[in-house]
Image (cartoon, rainbow, N blue to C red):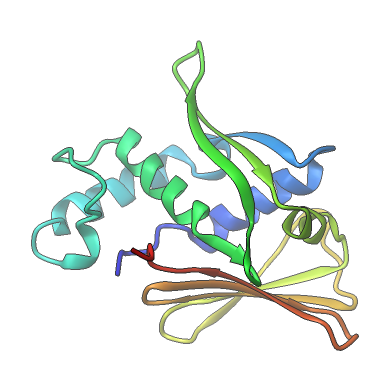
Length: 178
């Protein structure tokens, strides 16, 4: 059960960039969704707790201390485990280095997730592990009809959205199933 670094602000920024993309294939600069000061803060938290708290171990990150590149891999791993109902949010998600030395997320969204991000009437609600909720705000945001709920309960990460119609959808991050 890893510490979740996918914060409401990071998720809001990512959804906004997907919303503004004309295609399901999206390339996002990590620094555009996760500001450097936030990244530095998270690195200090992860590295100072890495061996004293199991939630900060990230067994797939072998480097010690964790660097920005390792942190970006944690973000990629957490995003890659998000699912919409039974389908992944992303068909592919990779880290790529640019010629300028930046790191980008190169991803292709699943249809359902892509069109959910395109919905300008969406209301996204992020639920923290302790039950507190935060409404995500977007520049295109307007509050009609469709509701999204993002939940981060220990090792579960979920985005739930439902229309006023009976259909419902859930997006979840789950442990790797082996």
